[in-house]
Image (cartoon, rainbow, N blue to C red; front, side):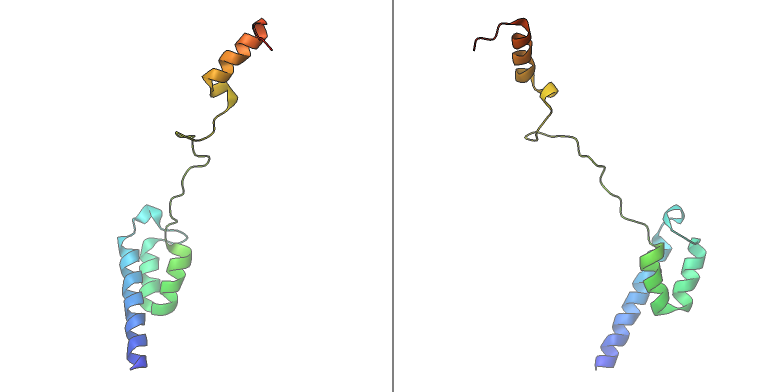
Length: 97
């Protein structure tokens, strides 16, 4: 029974890898051309699928850094109207301390 389950898991992984290679756009495939990836996954089922997942699959898009400040996030002093108003008042000598 365990052999059948392992065989089914390998078959599912192989089919997933093959489907993933076929549906990935040509310009997003890394390292070698898409047709060669298909050949690798078909000829060497387990190892080809693992190599595809590690070296050929497109990388996930990353969020741009730094993230612009949103509401509630700290902002620089030059973006704070109260700070600028207070600074202007102190520079003119209107500061009552």
